[in-house]
Structures are given as structure tokens and as C-alpha cells.
Length: 179
Image 1 (cartoon, one colour):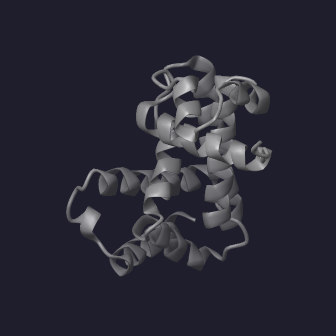
Image 2: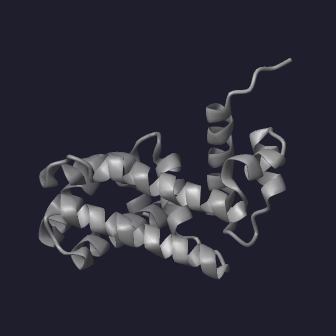
């Protein structure tokens, strides 16, 4: 008999759910598809997350926490552009893009929308605190990150082909002006 690893199972479910929610949105995502993608029984979603909304909330919270760790926590303001550019250009960019797309994807469900909006606002607040600026200025930075992700994912040239140094130079100017 195979031994259960609840932490690993939760992570499999979160990873599968993030992919599904990021590509299809909340309304078009079904928990049995997430469970199938994760290779686990659908009942484990109820056990670990309560329901689809709980899983969505966990995905959003995890995405915001990971973005904060990557971008805002204990980072000097002059280091933010390099960190952001690295995430937008390195091999993990697919994972980073999925996290941002999850935070953006319209869900069609009012409660999920509240969770999504609160998560985006909280991330901007944390970024503002890290940068010593206003939330509005931080939201401009977040909007730039999101816009860069969307345009690069869509393959819009020359942005999609821009290298790290090209992005860092521009991000440095923008972030310095905003934060």
C-alpha cells in the first residue's frame, strides 16, 4: 500500500488548480479535472480545501505570497527591477506568468472576484510598504508587471524578445519613478 504524503498531495492539487484557474478561469474550472491533473481522488480537494472556493482562495493566497517573497520582501528598492526582470525572462517565467495570470483571470463568480481583488490589493499594499510609497504607485508597478507578462506571453515583439538587460533598464526607471 502506498503511503500518503498530505503536503505533497496538497502541492500537487495547488499546482494543478493554478494551471487550470490561470488558463480557464474560475467558472470553467472543475474540481474533478484538477484532481485528475494532480492524479488524486477528487475527495481530497474537500479534505484539504473544503471546496472549489477554498482551493481557489489557497491558490490566490499562495500566488500572492510567492510573488511577495520573490519581489517585495526584504528587498532594497534598487534591487526590485532586477528581481522582476529575472522572473520575466528566466526559465521559470512560465510559472511566474501563471501566478500573475491566476491573479488576473476573471472568474465570473462574485465571491471568487472578491478574493481575487483583495489578493491583488494586498500584494500592492505589501509592495508599497517595501518601497516606501503609496498603494496607488505600487498598483502602477503591479500593472506594469501584469502588462509585461501578458504581452510577453502573447509573443508581442519586441517586448517578447527583449532580454533581461533591456527590461531591467526600463523597469529601473519606472519603479524608481513610482516607488
